[in-house]
Length: 241
Image 1: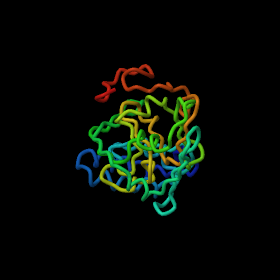
Image 2 (image 1 turned 90 degrees about the horizontal axis):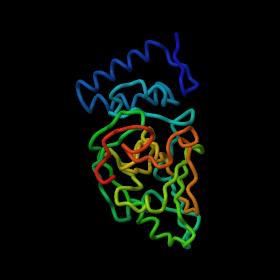
Image 3 (image 1 turned 60 degrees about the vertical axis):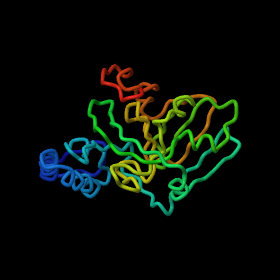
């Protein structure tokens, strides 16, 4: 018997059952076991999104990918482009981002499917800081986000992007750079919105004259993903939402 989901490589039943057992052990025995499980996901299935979603306690997160694999870039090769309706197009390296003014947040990560990870530690650069340095043109009304997986996209209004709890994150769970499974080395984190707005594997920030629905909105999720106020859910909102 094999199980297949959003990945193409079949996974043996004994492997899946073993990983699920380890997942419950992670819940019972803490973070060190959970981190082991999280690291094992990509070894079991390179396309691990569907598998990880079955495992309780995988770093306390359920890991998803919208392609057939976890895309990966080293910090040495990583670049983040800032483009669109701006006067100062810029390309940042990983070290450039680390050198900008830092912001630290400790906030919940809330998935629209119902699970939540409380008190996640994040560090990065305010998105508003990057936008300010780009010198935005008057026609710009929105910010579009592109992933180096070639598929994942997202967007925010310019007002939403200017909040002090929206960051371009390069550290998560005390790990710098952010792991590939969690969308690193750099990802977006939008604290007051459901997790699908926090674009993984961030490669480009584009200033635009309008919001363009992203990957998950095209599948039916709300464009404005405020926790507790969208998608028909009543989750308690994150502070400041």
